[in-house]
Structure formats: C-alpha cells, structure tokens
Length: 377
Ligand SMILES: Nc1ncnc2c1ncn2[C@@H]1O[C@H](COP(=O)(O)OP(=O)(O)O)[C@@H](O)[C@H]1O
Ligand SMILES: [Mg+2]
Image (cartoon, rainbow, N blue to C red; front, side, top):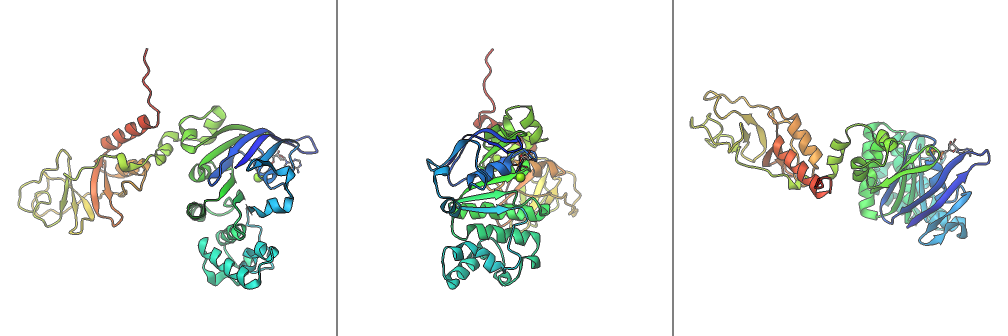
C-alpha cells in the first residue's frame, strides 16, 4: 500500500504544485489521479519514486517512509511509463524491454526470452523484436513502454498519461490491454490522466485533483458519478453522469422474456406460416430467429399479409450478464420498436426486454446501490 500523508510540494519559485495531499492507494488495484493540466498529477506521481522529493509530509510504502529507502531499490520496485513511451531510440524493441533485467545482471539469453514473453503479454507481435522504436506506430511504442516497465516484475507501476498521445481507437485498445494485464498480474498501479473518461474506465479508485494540487474527491468511479463532492467535480465529470454510471450495473438482473421469440419457417413466424398469429405474450411484435436461434428481425403478428417476410431491424443485441445495463438501455433505445435483444456468446437469442423492463432494472440497481432511500416526512 502507498500512503500519502499531508504531502506538499513547493517548487523553488514558490509554486505550490501539491498541497497537503493525503491518500491511501490500495495494493493490487488501479488508482487514477485525474484533474486539469497543471493540477499536480505528475508531481504527485514522481514523488512516489522520488524523482521529486516532497517539501512537506511523507509517503509510506507498505508502512515504511520512502525517504528512508535507497532510491535505486525503490525504483527497482516501481515500473514507470510515460507519454510517448520514452524509449531508447538506438536500441531495438527487445533491448528496450530488457533494459532493467540487463541492469540487474540477467544474462543476454534470459533477458531476451523475458522480452519476448512480455511482448506477447502486451499484445505485440514478437516479429517486431528487432525493430527500432521509430519503426513502430505510436500505439506499438506505448505497448513497448508498458512491457519495459513490467520487465523486472515490479509490484508497483507508475503511469503518467501513457495513452494520451495516441488516437481514440488505439487508446481504447491500450486501455483494454492494461485491464487484461492487470487481471492477470494484479499490480499496484498509479495511473495519471487528464481524461475523466479514461479515469472512470480504468480506475478502481479515482482521485480528482483541482488546480493548486488539492484533493477534490477520492472515490470509486460509480460513486464519483452518483455523488460528486462539489461543483468542481461535477463540472469536471461532464454530462450524462446518470447514463455513464449505468455501465457499473450488471444486466444480469434484467428480466427477459422469450414469449415473443419465434423460429423462422417453424410455421409460427407471425401469420406468414399457418395464417394464425402467434401470441407474443404482451409484446407488440415477434422476434424471428433463424434455425440456430440467431435474431433476424421483428415482425408484426397481426398486420403482415401472408407471405410478407419484411422484418424490422433488431438493432444491436446485448449479452446479459456480460454487458452492463448501459449497453442494454442503449440497445433498447436504438431499437426501432423499443425492445432490446439479449443473446448468448454465440449470438443466439436468450430473451428480449422492453424499455420498461430496462427501466425497472435500473430502478432496482439504484435501490441496491443505496441511491433510493426512504424519505419519511
Ligand atoms: N520544476 C518546476 N518548477 C516550478 N514549477 C513547476 C515545476 N514542475 C511543475 N511545476 C508547476 O507545478 C504545477 C503542477 O505541475 P504538474 O505536476 O506537472 O501538473 P500536471 O501533471 O497535473 O499537469 C504546475 O503549475 C507547474 O507549472
Ligand atoms: Mg503531467
């Protein structure tokens, strides 16, 4: 655990970059420091590995003041990743990744096999091992930067805006990769960003800093979204807090029905088969699937003429249990008829849900998260 105790950093010119910051960063989780440019994020991060020394307060690592620990031992326990990766331009990808193991005295062979193993871990083709950084895309360079930081298997990873310089699609891929790596390795990650969406996506805990290096709020992301501490945090979070928070609610509690689901050519698809309308069980439409159960589209059970196979598009399906209520709501809203289609991992329909059913699941989730409390007058 990393613990900031009233940490202050005043630069020689008088700038107070960090002001009395107290923070407990739990082990084996991602803690994000987020805030506008110049609010003291980089300064805070660099005090953890003593690239910058605090002017007041102290930082404890597993209960020991880091000021009492030799700097080189401290830094060895902390991988460090920065924007633009900061790779050595004259070294190959493999040699960049193997930098710390080589410094630690590993032989060339072992360091190299470690580099190749890490390339795989961060989603890089091992064929790139002999390339130089300038021969890689920005996203690939960042992956090398992450692999290099992980090379000596440090328990702590410090990341300063590592994905800020790449385009949104590449950034999303890097974020997913980081979450996957974290699931496998369980590092203590301190991640700095100015992007609140990135903070919400990655953080188990998010510290929002305001200009002057003061802590505005420290909370799990769904808590930030539901209960911002003040106007600054609320403004910083931006629009659609309620909708964004739904991504933290599982869709498993959503009630699905299979009543309106019919198989194509089974004689019951609307009135196109035997002329007798199937009963959609309260739904205004029937969802037609192929023989394997994959959705084809909606049909109106009463109104279609015999032989009319026109289907209304079913929109985007969601995977109950895996996708969030935000995704389920999006599916229902995107659907021209207002119903979301739930499918399994193989794309087979497991049931459908109306917008009303999604709304009921949202109310239930809010109640479960203490959003709805009885107010007795
Ligand atoms: N070496 C320095 N000397 C003086 N002021 C600095 C120095 N480094 C950073 N600052 C100032 O400290 C504040 C916080 O900087 P920084 O920690 O880099 O913020 P962030 O990473 O959140 O953008 C800013 O006002 C910045 O200008
Ligand atoms: Mg910075």
